[in-house]
Image 1 (cartoon, rainbow, N blue to C red):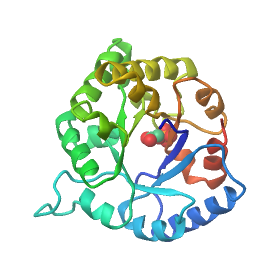
Image 2: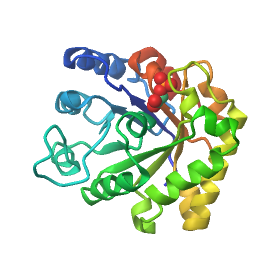
Image 3: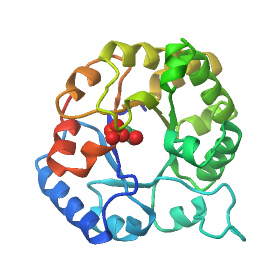
Image 4: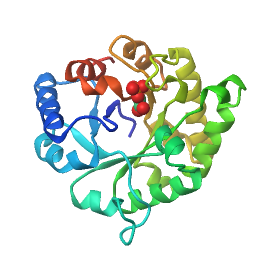
Length: 250
Ligand code: PGA
C-alpha cells in the first residue's frame, strides 16, 4: 500500500551514545503524532541494536547496506540475514555514495535486493543521475537502467516490499534541491516504469521518496506533488526538530 514515508539516512555520523540521544529527542518531538505514515531511521551498523531497543514501535529502523551472501568469509561485511535476526526491518540499497565510492553496480545491487527480500527486509532502493548525466539530458535513461537492472527482475509480490528513492546525485549534500516540478517529473516517470513493468495497481501502491537537500523549508512543496510520497533525508535527519518538521510537511 502507498504510504507517506519520511526516512533519515544518518550516513557515517554520530557515535552510538549520540545516536541514542537523537532517538530520545526524536521520540519526544513526535510524541503528539506526525503526519507521515512511517518514520524510518538508517543509522550506522554499530548503532542498530541500541536504536532498535530504544525506538520500539514509534520509529522503524533500517541498515544503510547489506552483503548479498547470507554468511561466509566476507571480512567486514554484514548480511541481510543478520539484520533480520536483529529485528531490523529495512535496508537501503543502491545509495549513490555506495554506487560511486564502493563501485556497486546495478547487477550487484540486484543480488543485494534479492538477499534483503529473502530475509523479509523492506528494501529502500535508491536511484538518481549525476550532474553530467542531467546536463546531457540522460537522466531518464540512467534511472530506467538502474530500475530495470537492479529491481525489475522481482516478482509483483516482492515489489510490495520495495520503496523507491529518487535522489539526484547533484542535490545530495549540496544544498541544491531539485525543484518540486523536477522531482515530480522524475517520480511520475518512475511510477510509469513500474506500471509498464508490473501493473497499475503495483505502480499506484509503491511509495516513491525524494532525496537530496530536502529540509524543513522545501519539504512541504516537494511532498505536495502527487507522485512524491515522502523523503529520504540526510543532513536534516541529524536534528530531531528538523526531521520532525519534515515528517509533518504533508
Ligand atoms: P542530504 O542527503 O539530505 O544530506 O542531501 C540525502 C541522502 O543522501 O540520502
